Length: 176
Image (tube, rainbow, N blue to C red; front, side, top):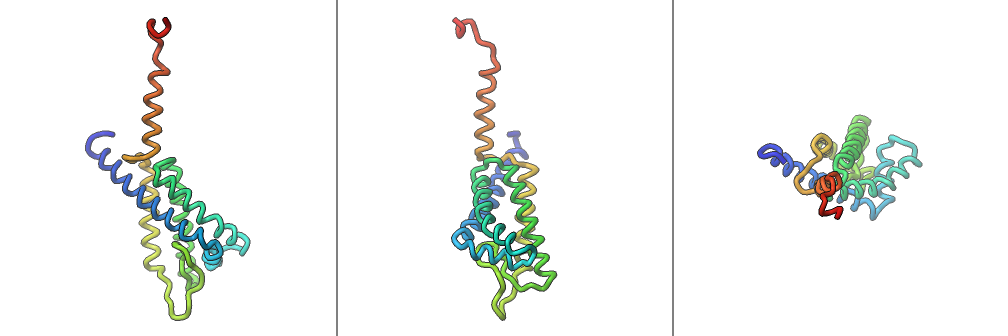
């Protein structure tokens, strides 16, 4: 790490990575205990045939948990952040679509989801900025995946330490 900006960026990146990872992990964990609710939430957007919504709703919690764990560990950070960015882009597009079509649904972002009961109002005005901010975090991590405390960093250090030993010619004492 370089002094000054590089160190600050690495620690800021660590904080961003941990926040995004925790959000995705919690979102997936809350859905995985109610896969039928996750399917219902995806279907409520009315963007795909039921069979596709059923598959997406069943897979989504496990994908969120996996990506969340990768981000929390700092393993394959750029890849996990890119997958996060794709997910958040899809979530944002879905919310915009639901709002534009006048659907009255709960986003299902943290479990639940589906049509809202009479008298309840959608929270699109809060959900969109939240997802936009998380999308920005994911993009930052795609561009600058190196963070201060991560499995990626540890693996890079291990590889760097092993490389000079393998590349160095053996001394007379070693060949003996």
